[in-house]
Length: 508
Image 1 (tube, rainbow, N blue to C red):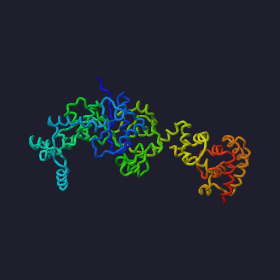
Image 2: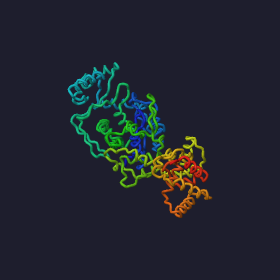
Image 3: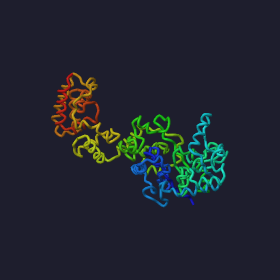
């Protein structure tokens, strides 16, 4: 019988969730949904020294905002609760003891100070210290001291750790679903700590035990965990779970925009884009990091963008709903090499999603924006402006830059436009246009265009001679959407007033 797909996202609550972590959660979610499986959220908080208050809540809120819903885990429970490793603490000791009893692990009593002294002595000889096969028989552990002495130390409460006993000169193979067969030499591995005398397991033991007990079928995680994979393979073997070992898939890194190294918060600070899904305030330093949600990104556009950073659908399609991503996603189309993060492409995705939003919804958000700016208007007028300018915006916030002139007549005029477009005969042309506009009854865009065009043609005046100057009087610059639409929305009275004000202000 085929094994049911069960995957997990297992972040540590040590700070805000990086967008690389969101992508890992997303790929797990897509894989689970594609195969009618389960997606689990497990919080790996064994390292209590790095625990940051609020981080767990941030992780859950981020996933909820992104629409990446887990169906088992922290906050909602499930058949394998609890889902916080700190609450599973009592589980792990028996597995650590089993490994010691079978000779696959051992007690080590070396103090941090003793190991640091050895490390520094070796560094002077330009040798890197590694606790393992080449020196474990010379250090203070249950491989070098008698069983009686070991028991005495344990009974007296002396600090200890339990280390895995890495085999000597063995090749360990990891069959990765993205990278193929990856081979590691055990000589390059150290005897990692699995369990500490404070009763807390390290990530390695807790991760393997929990994945086994939670019946995880596939471990889809970041490339940074690939060096740990041979250790995990050994733990499955030593614990007698080799047949139940999940399949591994190690995702490529998210890289800086220039491709040189892993994307970090500092890159976002330096280049002005978020690297976290939500705004985060550090509880200690009070430093604030921007988030995609608060920066005006649509959650579905953000997720669409992330999905394509490392995965290729094999077609030219770029816009996917979450359901379409589920249908299209396969691990064999995830690349091996890192993906450069492009902040401009992130904006492009948001632009695409903004265009698909109903005008009425955008108008509501736009009206809120206007209220923040101290502008009072009605939803009908807001809706008309949105229809006119939304294709120019990447974010709701951008709408103001493309529409402020509807609510505030220009008081200064672009010097470059004046120099290039404002000629000696421009004032007389503007007065003639003003007369034509005053005759217009309906004052609708199509009618205004027709009348102005007819006047210009009759008098053999080029459209450019008039339009650039008229736009300058309405907007104060050469920017803005269709001029006739601007005129219609401003209304005859305001248009006439702006022509008069401009002609009296501009002296050339």
